[in-house]
Length: 122
Image 1 (cartoon, helix red, strand yellow):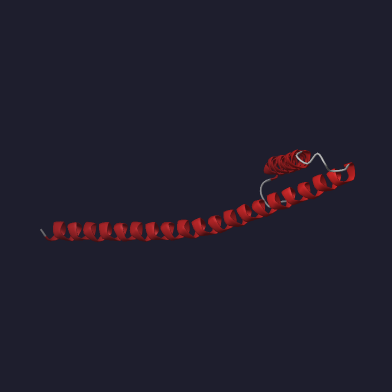
Image 2 (image 1 turned 90 degrees about the horizontal axis):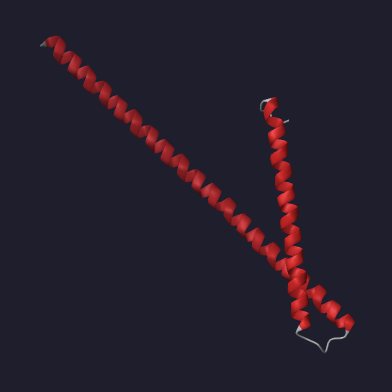
């Protein structure tokens, strides 16, 4: 359980399931893309034997997948860094805004008190 209301749990389960399906489909797409690229690359070498062709396709596809994995890891890491950075900025801006609101309200309270005191004296 997530600690939230029980009526929210099915939605969270559905969201997690959708994320898993999206991840699976993305992975399958990358694997197909790697295989097609590998076959196109090896196809430019008509002198290869069948065994050599298969080996080139396998190695090229593995390299393609590894490059994609590293790129995805780099993007994921950067997204995490940006999330942290923007969360810190948001928190600082929120704190600054809160201080300004408190200062403005304090100023208005002092002004109101001055008006009340002047009215009472006058």
